[in-house]
Length: 332
Image (cartoon, rainbow, N blue to C red; front, side, top):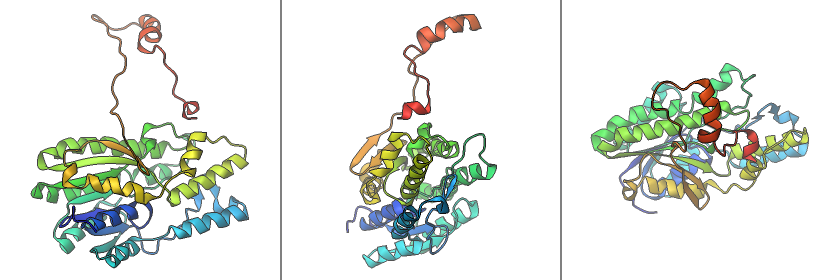
């Protein structure tokens, strides 16, 4: 047990299992008091919906393997809080969907009522649903974007007044490499995670004068999500559908969530107080800093508007010299 976060109070959403659980425990090991959270008690959902496939569409062997792997990763806010208390820390569980504004407020208020403050907010809650843009139901879009970045706004909106008063705070938001786009059948998830990045960078600027930092991370870790996605990829290949090798290997080689929790705990310390508005890629012991988008080529006209004839000549020659069209093929 360390003491870099002694006296600090942290809320971690989606901390019943997986990445959120690992982060909550790592924060507690540095002395933080925790409020853990997930939607409901006894969360044992094995992730039965894997895109267009149901768990019943898998072979008996694959189905049993999936259920076994998911069962080993199950947990909820109470079990995470118990683990923290068993190792000598302080923690209370809170069950509720933070996609609801009032519920998110109750979560933050729980931290204040139980421990007197809210200093560290880790927004880790997330979900995903598959669907092509031409067939995705509205409720599938809403289920994903209603979680990210909506719940992140909800919790930050309620937490930041306390942080501003204390002139200290850390907000750490979970995004995904999906924020770059280019994941077929995942336009909702890509949009949601791009929203997290933009949201994080905006509030970082707003909150910097008050001693509050806001950063985002894109994780790669072994979770129930990676297990179910891998099962979906295998089924897709059995049906003769193409799976980009980059994605397949990404999930096959994922390290445990405990590795990435260390860097995220570092972001919550005083020593990391100068870091804000950044997006980090974290995989095992690998930590990368994502760049901020910027113009890489331009064309300009001094007088008058561009004509279409001028653009037909100028764009390929100057603006898009060496350009490769963005497509799923580029992801292989």
